[in-house]
Length: 502
View 1 (cartoon, one colour):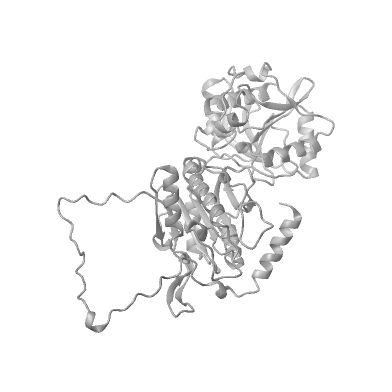
View 2 (cartoon, helix red, strand yellow):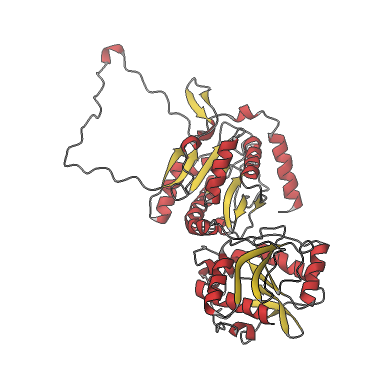
């Protein structure tokens, strides 16, 4: 996002915050219908018994309720709102637009041809198993506050692969700021990041790369922020309202409201639902406990240790993928393989004990001078750096190409021909299969698309612009640009053995 646009957003939110948060506490659903005409006293009729028409034994019973996908979290206070015409409506912090999720589920059902349900959720009795409730949804305009027990419960839910969505339904700066704070409590290990335009969440079923926000004409693209756990967006925050658009209306009672128009909100909502469904298995797989080693442990000098580089971006993209590949390496090669993955910080941890380093990411990152110096020395003494673009996103690709240029000035990345020895180290991998997202861009591609930098004839930097390690886990990552499971695993083993023997 350009600096000018960011400045406009900051100024806009500062202006909105002048109003007190209670001024935002109004009904955001459709207004009540006109009061019914009352029957005069002489026209009174007795009430009908309930049910007015009893069901016969031979009538069909109701179809079973559809499986619940989204739980709308009950939080905050409730009250009564008086309209100008004297009518009133009940309002509650958690449910200012009562039909938002229900409407989204109906629309999603038409897209998928499958019915999914939703239900209110009380955190006091919530089961933190994502298999029961894959998505939790917080909506509101005032300050959301979570106590320690709720934070612990939601952290457990996220750690098992659950997804939490925060919708500042009218663009309230109070709810948005509280959501950002809540995310920091829930996933303190990872920062909230603006999701890049080519992220799958914007394209799962329909193209949501453009959007309109009421009273914000300078915004032409959606702005969603997220926290990754592995490659999965575990917490999603929308600073502009989504729910009223799902309910097919604007926000007439709040002049200061900022929200996506109906078309934009519906596209984003359908994609969010599709993402939650499509990435549920990957989220659970990546949430499994993993054994990490320590950087200073003593190991046999001939043992393959999977040393992964930490950096300031989302560096731990596919937890568990390395261990899966290493187990296969142990079965199919004579290499002495450690199943522990070690995380190393160049410039802080010694790199001399590792013959190869593995680096992957999803978004922007940068090395400081100490890290560059350590990595440059590592490569010059014969180490190999294998780099993977998680999900095949353009942001990481751009960042890596910039950083490798700063790390090794004067050396250019070059395509690695399919007849090179690294493609034959364990398996013949000169022909590979890609995910549909790659084939949509390059339908004729059937050879490995690796690039690298050679030192004295040996490849010391090997880069895959398409995701390799997603293939190692063997689960689906919809719209990820990468290798299919068998091809990615065979290519991964070749790269590791090449790095250990060259």
